[in-house]
Image (cartoon, rainbow, N blue to C red; front, side, top):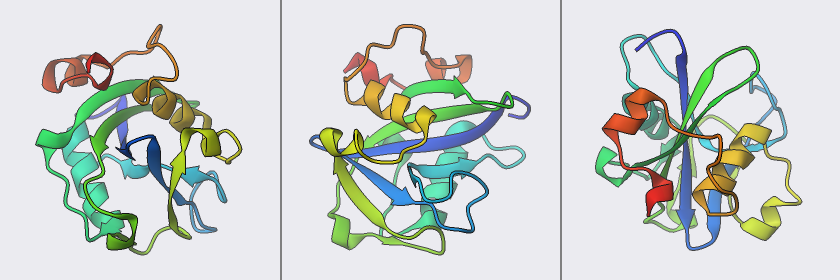
Length: 155
């Protein structure tokens, strides 16, 4: 998987809360914003493999299996990159998690708290879609995601 498939991010949620991390001064973009866990795909990875690798690199104390994932949507961001968004339930407590070397902290946000929080636009769209705040009109999964995983919005 190369070319347009360039990143995978995860909406980890429990009840009406979503897990985000704060991007630190070393982040390549959106410094100071709260973001979903995930990152860029490496050569030869599919979107799920990239996501599982990124989650294990960024979060200590958390193991995510592909069986827990649902596809949320794929969004083309400025510059033409396609970001794959997935969702999974957060099955451990916040204090059981530790952010490795990236970011300035982890936090759970309710949907209402997100309205007053600096979150990247494309992440906010995926969160709102996953949590049922918006309809999937015009947003969908790419062919790979559509045929490989259940849709979070089908639940």
